[in-house]
Length: 236
Image 1: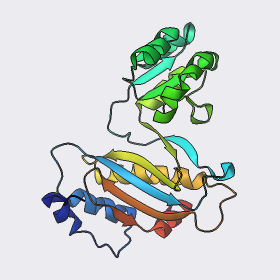
Image 2: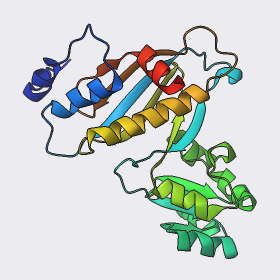
Image 3: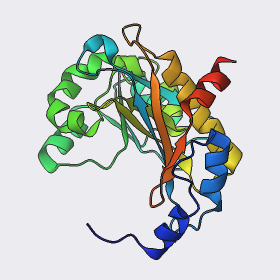
Image 4: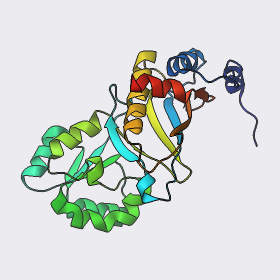
């Protein structure tokens, strides 16, 4: 294992590993640490008391964060006719049908971050499952990306809609902003995501639901957040 850099070690020394911070305390400390030459993302990891092997304990959803994620989102829309026009007017970066499907399949083209489709285009999109699925790009009606209201879907994606899904180890990983964001904006975004995950608690989940929470920048050390303070805050 390689040695940590001087900047990382310096930042890690400011973290009390035995302490669980409130969200506000963690973000304030994270902001006070020395940064890198690029604007790092702020990542949150939430360990849930669920068993993802069981369908009735799957936690998945999407939310438009109050302040976005600080990144330009390239949206591809599969639509035709009037819906194609609506998608373009809403700001979609790419709109089409068979032409885009062939480009993805034949050329390996993947210069987009989100995919939206109207229900009547899913027969075309379905053929791309092996390419889009593993990358988390497959449109899904539960996430609002298979819809006739393509204009709304495009605007939400452009505004920084974040999709979350518990992985096989029971952890949700998500981006809640950039290091350059004001602390209040990071707290707002993280709180909104945590509230959505609390509301998405499966009825089949027993015992402690929010087990562990950690927040960090891309290149920085993780700071543990006390799950009890999150639960109390969002339940109040």
